[in-house]
Length: 242
Image (cartoon, rainbow, N blue to C red):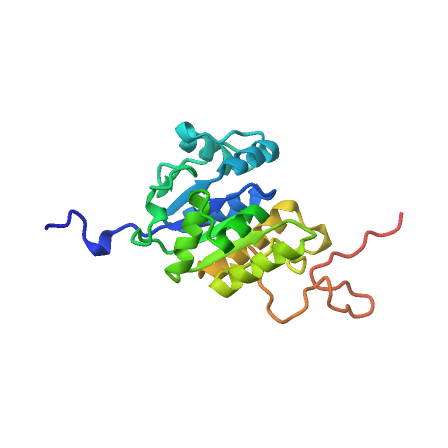
């Protein structure tokens, strides 16, 4: 049987699942970075995630209009919607359990669930497969592909911790949405903190990025002691007294 597409030409996407936990800006940052890097992406948005998206962004997400809604969502704040014409992005409805990512024979690089709700973590951990997001994550685990889950809820119950441990034992990377402040300091913007977490997700996937400043082993100018009469590196002289 003649193949219509060579093996070398087959599309192999990263699968991004968005569950109903608060934290949709993390998902948007990961999606932008993957698409900006030229990676093909398959997107799955759970039913609960649509409610969270509407609450956090004021924008709907509809199966029939997913491309328009995704374009508006991925547009930077106060900017025009993202032009998706040059992006390799596909979408699978969460209720479609016959979709490509539901099978291990569907080629994929791996999957990230961001944000990952407690319900999504539990469903993936016990193999519930109640929707495509949970099924796709389970498939990628069984196929030994990279899987990253990004829980955000805090504090956590014992059952949630047990489910996270089960995911870890199954091979997933459990990456809580816990931003670091060393890159931008106490004056870090929300966007910088979001990018920090998104950058950690990309690191776990092995995807190069420049979303956050990396630790170099040297204290920044804000922390370096200054010589008497001289400002610390990177700090301006204080204004003269009037």
